Amino acid sequence: MTRISDSRIGQIKSRHEELSARMASGALEGAAFVQASKDYAELEPVVQAANEVARLRDELAALTEMAKDADPDMRAMAAEELATVEAALPHADHRLAIALLPKDTADERSAMIEIRAGVGGDESALFAGDLLRMYQRYAETQGWRTEMISSTSTDVGGYKDAVMSISGTGVFARLKFESGVHRVQRVPETESQGRIHTSAATVAVLPEATEIDVQINDGDLKIDIYRASGAGGQHVNTTDSAIRITHLPTGLVVIQQDQRSQHKNKAKAMEVLRTRLYDQQRDALHAERAGARKSMVGSGDRSERIRTYNFPQGRVTDHRINLTLHRLPEILEGALDELIGALTAEDEAERLAAVGEA
Image (cartoon, rainbow, N blue to C red; front, side):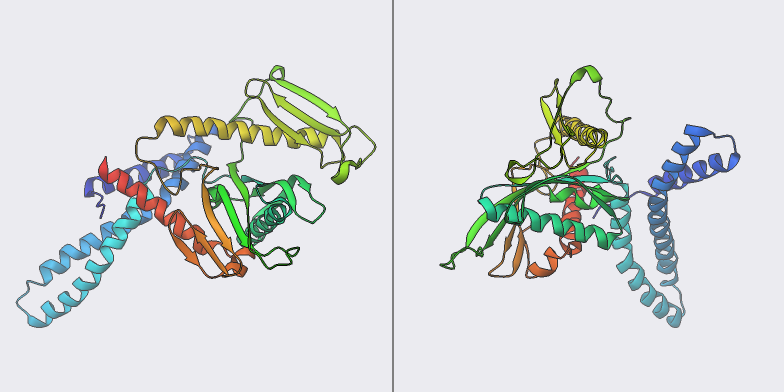
């Protein structure tokens, strides 16, 4: 169990009081006030956890002394309360240790989800559609706003690929462990022999970037404008509104044709390009920081098979943490909290262990 020292708790409280005094002084303006407000908000849950630990430690010390009292009634009362405090303190210490773990700067951001059908033909495309609807429904339960950025539908009702924006506080923190290969096992409607088929779709969850995060030079872009086409190659409108942007330094290509306006398509394409470039930067930074020890939960390797959805058995298995839930229908309806909570807890445990080893 990680124990935070009393001196560290004192430092946390002092920092909180300092920020509070600076914000109340009226001397901060503009960007300085915004930064102080952000620091204060980030420190607030840490201070609450630290105050709880300090309170329990003070109680423990007082009750330990009371347990030495000559009065047997006082000793009995102290012993009873002592047991309660001793049981609560390790949990409070753990919550404080979690609160002090380094935060991913992107955790509070909105996110972009890209879903691509993999092996399995039409069945894979249908499964990609199932995953898209699962995330849409989960977003609804969280009060987040979703917006389709682009999609390529199939004749059978699925998607070859789909990109969706999910806006809200902490979206990326909740969904970042969804990146990877999702596998489905079920009997397709077109299967006359009742054989189970295995298909897959790849999910990528990217934190949304701003123009401050990634500055793109116009000279680095090759922009092609053409007539948008739908399923089967038919033109979906009669104007040249589709946009293909190639980022020459990286070779990244973004195609956007879902909007009727060329300007809207270009804006959406730039949004996707900026987010993908930001993700590349983050990947490079994480690769530099990664040591020999690799997190099973948070590796973010999109080629890794992370989860299986088995329809005949009604189960969902997350292979990273060996968790199986026999709640497949509810999960596809957006009941992801149990899975996400377990993945988050495992990631926190791994990072705490890494801190202990350092």
